[in-house]
Length: 586
Image 1 (cartoon, rainbow, N blue to C red):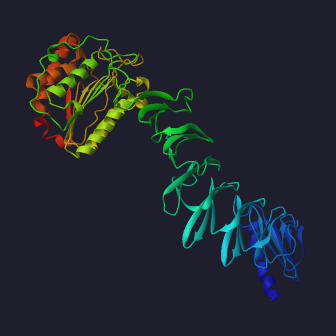
Image 2 (image 1 turned 30 degrees about the vertical axis):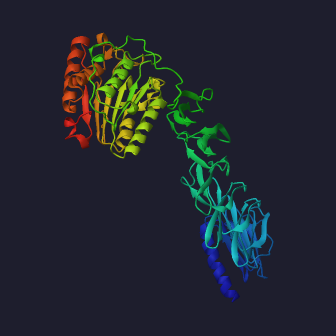
Image 3 (image 1 turned 60 degrees about the vertical axis):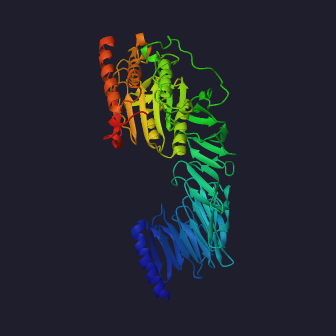
C-alpha cells in the first residue's frame, strides 16, 4: 500500500513540477521532500507525502504529511505555516483551509490562525469567509472577514455577498425571509421580510422594497456602491428616483421630500413624488402647484414659481392689460346661441404679461374668445375655464381639469382648448413648447410645457372630440417680429407634432413663421379672423369652412398689413381625417 501511495505521490509531484517549474518532489526510498529547480532543499526528504499546490494560485504552497498521517502547510520557501495537526488542507490566494475530524478552520497565508476547526464547511472568497455550522440537523451559514472578524453569526440558510451589500436568507415553514447587512457587518434590515430589488444588483445604487407577509410595501432602503446606507431602513414608506443622481424622493406620512447622501434636504411636505425634468420639478403642496429647482445646483432658492388651485376666495383680481381694450367690430354684436351646449367644455389660456416680452392683446384675445364660447357656441359659464397670465402650474391644472371632465362624462364630453401667448422652440430638438408666464425661454425644456405632451395628454382622454386653437408661433419670434431672446437671431422651424385621438389642431402659423397682431383691431391676427368667422356664421359653420375662411383671411391680411407670410394650419388626427371638415363647434 505504501508503494502505491509513493507512486501516486511521484506522479502528482511530476504534474506539479510541470506547473510550478520551480519546485519538485525528491525521494529517498519511502521518504519524500521538495527541492527547487537548482536542487536546493525546500522540504527535507523525511516525510510520508509532499504535494505542491499551485493551480490557479498566485504562488505555490506545499502540503506535507508526516508518517503519523497528519498534514501541515508550508510556503514555497519552506516556512512552516501550520502545525502537523490536520487531516487535509486546501489553499487559496486569500487563506489556507485546514480540516480536522471533519471540522474546518482557517489560517492566513502567512501562518496565523484565523478560525479554529469548528465549522462544518468553509468557503473563502475575495472579501469574505463563508462558514457553515450544523445545528439540529440544519446547515446554518455565517460570515467572517478575511482577518477573522465575525460579521454575520451562523443563523441563516444562505448568505450572499454582493458588491454593495450582503443578503441573508432564512426559511420558516417553507417561506423564505430576507435581510440585508452592510459590507462591514451591520444589520441594515432584519431577516424577517420579503425583499425586492428595484434595480440590478451591483449597480451604483441599490434600491430595495421591503415587504411583510401580506406583501404590502412597508418601507424602503437604498444602499450605495461601496455599501454606505444612503436612505435608512424604516425611515420612509416610499422612495423613488428623481432623475438626478444622488437625489431620492422619499415619502413619510403621505408626504414627499428629498434625500441626498446622508440627510433629508427638503422635508416631506409635498403631495407627490419629486421628479426632475432638466433641473426643475413640478410639485403640489396642500393643493398648490409649484416648481422647485434642483437643490444640488441652487440650494439658495428652492421654490421658483407657484400657482394656486382654483378657490372660491379670489386671491387677486383679473390680470391687467397694458394695451387698449377690445373695441373692434368683432367685439360688438356677438351672436347668441339658442340652446346650451351642456357637454362642451372650454379651457382658455391667455398669456400677456411676460416679465421681459409681453404679448400684445393676448388678454383681449382670450377674453373675447370666452365671450364667443359662452354666447355664440352656447357653452355654459360653469363649463368655461379661464387662465389669465397662466403659470406652469396653471397649465398643469387645466390639463388635470380636462382629465376630471373626461372621467366624469365617460366619452360624452367635447373640449375646446384655446391658447394665446408665447410659444418657443427647443433649438436642439426643434420641438415646440408653450411658454408659461413664469417660464424661461433660455431653459424652455425645463420651464415650458411641451406641445407634444399637451397633445398626448388630451389624446389619452375619453372624449367625443377635442379642438385646439393656438394663437402662437414656435419660431422664437414675438408678435412684433422681434426675436424672443436676444441670443437668437434666426427663427427656428420646429417639428410638426401630430395630434392623436379625436383631435383637430388649428394653429396661427406654421414652420418658422410669426403669429402677428392686428394693431388697429387690438387683437392677434389669427384670433381676430377666427372671431370674425364665428360672428359671420353665428358659430354654425362646419370646421372645414371655418378653417378655410380663417386661413384665407389671415394669409391675405398678413401680406397686406405686415408684409409677412402667416399661414394658419389645420391638422386633424388620423381618426378624424375623413370626417373633421363636416364637424361643428356646437
